Image 1 (cartoon, helix red, strand yellow):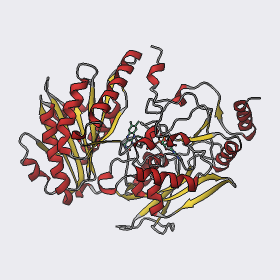
Image 2 (tube, helix red, strand yellow):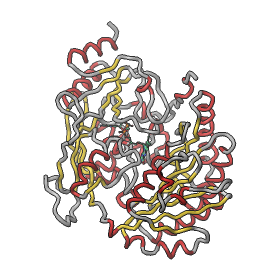
Image 3 (cartoon, protein in one colour):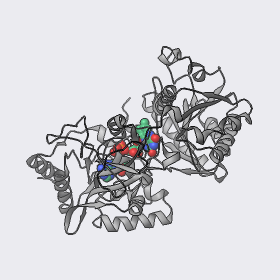
Image 4 (cartoon, rainbow, N blue to C red):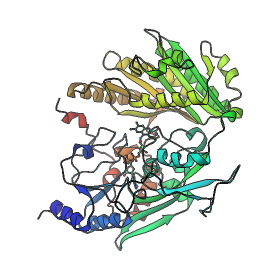
Length: 497
Ligand SMILES: Cc1cc2nc3c(=O)[nH]c(=O)nc-3n(C[C@H](O)[C@H](O)[C@H](O)COP(=O)(O)OP(=O)(O)OC[C@H]3O[C@@H](n4cnc5c(N)ncnc54)[C@H](O)[C@@H]3O)c2cc1C
């Protein structure tokens, strides 16, 4: 019997769920990249099954790739023909039959990791310890009745909290709380060494910070403790949309980029997001056109472009915003309701991938512009290369030390258009990231994915190697991510239409 059949037989005997179908779904993740077919795809429902799979992998010299929701846009959750793809999205969140539970198990703890309850006007730093497969959306639904939420929520609110930590995700809350490496205070993991497979707990914040962004290369997270914070009261919250419209993309970028530099120095936000409005964003019959406060923000004159900056935060942190904006001629300041800001943040989230009738192809993601005043140059180059080829829209976030841009060409579902989009992404990367004038760095969030080693600096490579030696000395978890020259293969090449 060949090894694959032997392994699947073992899973059957141990009652571990697996799929032996040739399932395209598991050949890629949200990156549209591929390493081919995984050796096998398994779905453990608890710690015991995780340990059995890892023990088998150790004994048979197979690699293991943990994968939760597979929302990595950088190819972090892919396995090749020598690796078991271990789908871990049910860990700590399902019952004994493997059914995902609507009411998750959540333990609130203080900084000493002692169980506690949320008090009125609580000003302590609190963590929620949850199963590794839980998403921020699920945790926030649970916390809402206590008027709390996860400190950082990526646009992919349904991605797992362990996956967010493993990719060091950023999101809503990052301008104030940092990225996931800054907000995790506890890990329970399955790791392996020559002696076998074991479960460990990690409580040291400095160690956890180093592990943020480890991308499944050290072990499998079973439980994770994540920072939770009170929901801001509407009476203490300011919600502002700034808009600027012009037919000159460089002018928009320069003006808004300089304004961003100004607000970075003089304001503090909980959320600071931007998007561009284009006709593919909303259908003509979208209910938002009936929204009196928002409809005109979403409209753009033919031939023009409109950039929206969405700012949400405590009133006191945003008290200088209106006077700052007055210095920038033509920029409109609009204070909106809390409810409408949540709608606008939803529109911004949808704008990442939403394009009526098209697919947004990832590849030119997470471009960190360290000097926001260079935004005009960067946008001009993007549009120069893409316009007339495929539609697309820049979106992104403002962080404390720069801005992050995502741009995805939007292709029709044909091989030809997919490949065109991929080519555009390559061209954008080459022209913008290889030119120092733009002050850009590739991927400061969303994880480095397949390029973990290639894009890390010497110090980080050393740190990752030391962590690997400490937690995974047998090198079974995602070993391919330690390659300085990873093979980047686009799934679009396999499209049959
Ligand atoms: C529409 C969309 C919006 C997005 N928005 C954001 C955003 O705002 N900010 C941002 O930073 N990213 C964003 N992303 C990227 C992606 O959502 C994040 O990288 C996410 O955190 C990955 O979580 P996941 O559960 O999907 O993990 P996966 O993609 O399944 O895995 C990601 C990595 O984590 C590891 N991993 C997962 N679970 C475990 C575990 N239990 N133990 C050990 N390792 C594990 C995997 O091995 C892999 O290396 C977005 C993606 C999409 C598709």
